[in-house]
Every structure is written in C-alpha cells, then in structure tokens.
Amino acid sequence: MNIETTLPPTAVPGTPSINIARHRRFFYKWISPLRIQDLPYDRERAEIDFKIASRFVRADKPADPSKQVLLDDINRTLADDLLKESDGIYRFILATFRRAIVNNVIILSILSSLTLVIVAVVNMTLSASVDFYSFFWLSDYLPAAGRILDFDIILTKDSVNRAVFGCVSTIVGLLVLWFFYHGSYSLCQSSNGHNISDFILEYLATLRDQFRQAHINALQTLSVEMDADEMRRDAGLWVSNLQWMALRALFIESYTVRYFRQVRRESSFYVLVVPMLFAGVLISISYIFGVQYFNFLDANADLYQQNTFYPLFLVLVIICFQHLRQSMAFIWRAIESRPWVRFRELNFQDAITEIMNAYVTQLDRWRSLMKDRSH
Image (cartoon, rainbow, N blue to C red; front, top):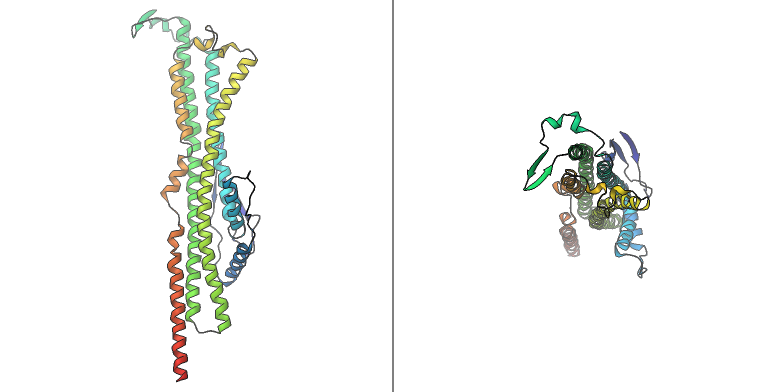
C-alpha cells in the first residue's frame, strides 16, 4: 500500500488536502482516499470563496464555440472552469478513480481474451499430443463403438484424446477466468465503488454543512446589532456565499452524472474492442502466415477435428461474456446503495426566503423605531 498526500494542481490557499492510499491485488488496483483534512468554515475561508465566486461570475464564456467541438466537451469545459479552484480536489480524485476503474476493465478484457485465445490455440495445436487413452487405460473401459442420439460413434484413440484434452483445457480456462474475475477483479472494483461512493457522499455532505453555516451566519448578521457598513459587508459575504454553495452543488451534481456516463462509455468501449482486437489478430496471423489450424476454408484443418471442445469452449465464451458485461456492476451497486446529497436537498429557495423574511422583519423593526423617535 502506498499513501500520498495530494493537492490538485489548481489548488488555492485554504484548499483541504487529502491522503490517497493506493492498493494492488495481483493485476488490478484500487484506491481509497482517506478522510478529508477539512477546516472549519470560518470567515477566512468564506472570504476565499467570495473571491472565487466573483472571478467565476465575471469570467468570459465562449458564446460561439467551434462546430467541431462536441456539446459534452463544452459542458465539461464550463464545469472545469467552475470547479478548478473551489473543487479542484474533487475533480482530481474522481479523475484518479476513473483511471483506476477503466484500467481494471482493460486488464480484465485483456486477460479474459488472452485466456480464450490460449485455450483455442492449445486445442487446435496440441489436442492430440497427450495420450490420455493409453495413460488411463481407457481401452479397458470404453467400447470401440456406440450410438449417441441415433448417431454411430466410433471411439478411436485420437477422438478420445481430443475429447479429454478439450475437457481439461476448458476446465483450466474456466478456473483461470474465475480467478481473474472473482479472485481479484471483483474485490478491487467493489472497493473502488464503495470508496468513490463514500468520497462523493462525504464531500457533498461537507458542502451541505457549509451551505447551512452560511445560511446561519446570514441570519445572524441581520439579527445582531452592528455598524451599518459592517452589516452590509457581512450580509453580502454570507448571502453571496450561500448562492455560491448552491451553484457548486448543482454543478457538482451535473459534473458527477456526466463523469459516470464517461466511465461507462470508456469501459464499454474497451470491453467490446479488446476481444475483437484479439480475434482479429489471431485470424490475421493465421491468414498472413498460412497457419492451417484455423483455416476455416479447409475441411481437413484441425479447426474441424475437435469434439468436446466446441460445446465447452462455447460455455467458456459465454462465461467470459458475462464477466465482461458485468464488469462495471460492482461500481453501480456501490453508488446506488448510498445516494449522496442532491442539490434539491439544500432547499435553496427556502433558505433565501427565510433570509428575505428576516431582512423584512428587521427593516420593519427599524421603521417602527424611527416612527417612535419621530413622535
């Protein structure tokens, strides 16, 4: 396990750091951000957020983007501009998770495809090389001929050796697939799923607490006796930060949804492309170098001389397909099991309404005092 303390490249003063623990299990990796080294949301941090919010609302946004730029790229750029200062650590951790998750999917696709290719090649080239028939004295137990499903079956030495080899090789391939998937991949991806879910949940919960603190401070500013200029500055600070927190929560939620869509797209791409690439390379090598084992145009090729290999290899392919199809299921189950704080849960409109009511109440009180003094 390797632990490192990380700050995003665009971090500003007051940005909390975070420890990232990197783990490995055989070929796969998972990461676990440790608890955020957060600070209390005091006036100093509020001033920093106020400056960031001011820069963001005054920033120039592209009004006429290039026609060659995708809409997702435009939205991602706008979100990056919003989050790079205030939530750079969030973007950085999610990007780190994405690399780990997608790399695990790539490795699983490579190992699964390689296993299928090795099983196929071994059966085509070596299925008759091991004399199971003589080694296990099968001639003493197997009849020379028989009928299966109304077909005459002649049990020759070669056919028995190929049948046993096909069974043994596919069982070994099945065990290898099980080890690659259940023995290590599922554990690592489950850990990644739970850890990224916990990180998002904790991060957005912290943002919700800061929103509530800004709301409380804004109400206290209007209810505490202080100098008019000081009250104006504090009210502007906390009300602006209240809106800024709500805007961050909305953009982070949108950014997170697009993030998981991107992870799904990338993972689906590699799950499809890697097996096709392996199959294409195998066929191309056989064609270019004239390898007759996989020559499907030759009726005498070893491709057509197998027996138990065909149904068992089909089962192997189906199991491999199921593993690849479910390669991201661990992530989605972890995400869905612990829903994070949503923008709607901030009750932004109610918070603004409560502040305005407090402002009107305070203004009415001042008017009443002025009237009393005038009389």
